Length: 453
Image (cartoon, rainbow, N blue to C red; front, side, top):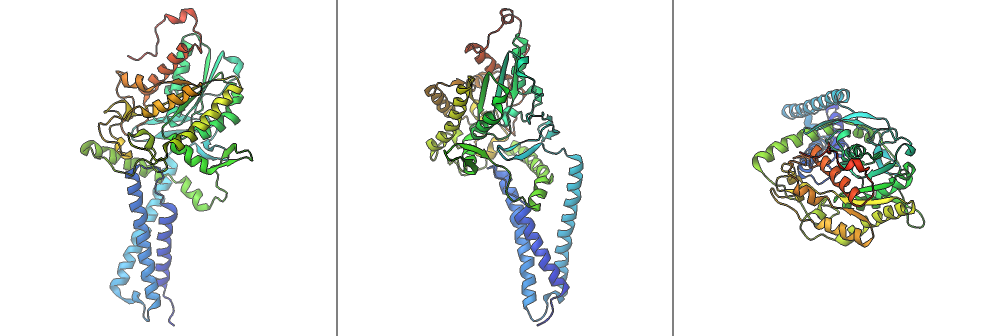
């Protein structure tokens, strides 16, 4: 049996390395943003295919009587592949180092109870091609000012919600939590509004947050800002949740039991964020010119993030709604037990408000250009609230009737600064109408500095 040549050994290692990169480092997004899924799928499976071919050729050569690497053309071909792979890898490493130095680190972290949270006292920036905003996390892990003693205020409101509440794309002072606080103070109400929103939180995590942390702030009012995507989030969260012997949820851990070195490296890589943003930029320009819509499987909340939002039959719809309503009920009961007023809202999406809102990005999730979805989710939540004695604040109608445009970022789809102003106006009006706050007599007359023009 002949000896294995150095070229064959290098080819085996190279093939294994390329396959490992494809399997371990190139991740297909879990969201159903079809452009990103296709893009990363192509990269991932191209790398796996290339590695497999190199490895297969090396194995065939080792098994033959004479090394195939002695052929000049074959050797030259493999050398070129090796040079290309090594050069690409080195360029990626150098670019990653540059990004690590120049890009701000994310404040997001794994959490043993809430799956994920924000690093206390973290300062960073959140940039995409649509915005560049400052991120300042307080000692409690919230995007808000430091929380002062309750005795300093006559009214304290705790905001629960996801990235809309947290404030994607706007500065902290522009979030509807902050604007609502400013409006209340301008009207003579000594109020504190705590923004406890966090990216992709849903009622499972919001219940845990209120139970373990939120109650300690002694809020007078808790406002839960529901999102239609919470239906899917609650489904996945319940799969990963831990329950006590009585069936009560106790945590949704985001910390893996065995965190490997590869996981840590991939989790710290900035290259993924850079590619994600640039692909979105290219896609937004392409859509603007072509007006195309991506197609995707629709109707099952397990795989379709916005199944509930579509005017289509939804698979196991009641089961999914019941799960989310169960955790909202737990939040409501926790508030009643602690003499806290509970308010429920549901964010309207751009595809419900106007045919022109969310114009550049709606195709990513299979929504047709110019289409307007119905208010079926709002009606479902409103009915649940009425049946359970929960105060429900309707936001869809005020957004539809607003003369301000746009209220949403055209590609990303989150509400923009004007959308946050309007949300604060709606909440403020509801607090007054429901007589949950009492305005000083003189406060009814001065002009509202936050009123939209």
